[in-house]
Length: 121
Image 1 (cartoon, rainbow, N blue to C red):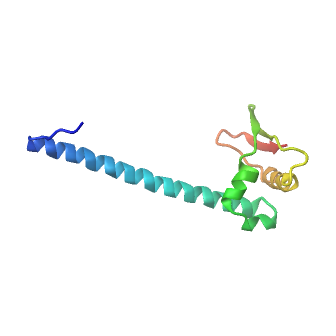
Image 2: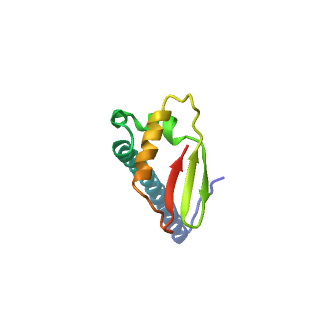
Image 3: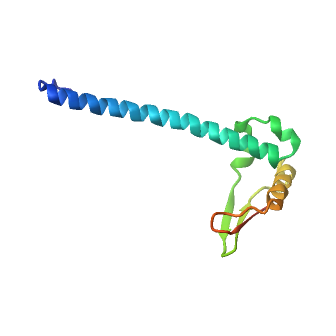
């Protein structure tokens, strides 16, 4: 229910709140766009550096369905982190993912705690 505000000061304060809310919504929309662009750039980097050459032309949504939505588990120890992916033996992209995992594991990647990252199937 809306009611009329007769106090000018109250109108100014409520207008400021509306302006702040609109600015926040605009900032959230902008962050969403930049986040999507960042994810796309990260996906393109991974396609270029880790996957076989024919993956360089694959759309990000296709990568999402075939690779990034892969189920798995995470195990953290004192000196290493193991990511174990659950990919069926008969999966069409299994060999490509195995290729990418070999490339990632060859890079000797460490997290910010100094634990080595290892990815396996």
